[in-house]
Length: 80
Image (cartoon, rainbow, N blue to C red; front, top):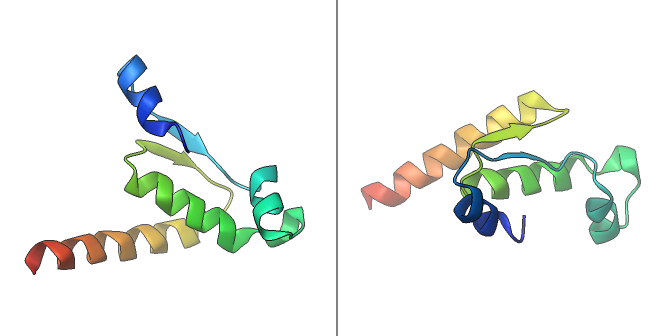
């Protein structure tokens, strides 16, 4: 995630990201593998906001809802 823009610029290809249940999320939160759902969703939404073309997830429903909220927030920001 930290070097996402570099990948996009270097290869000029669509980017697929997968952050589900990764060890960096457990390290950041201090939680176990089965208890990082909120952290996973936050990282997935950050990837989407950063321009990821595809996101691989284990939890499609929360991601779909989060993406809908993100889109609504972006639209509201444009209107103002």
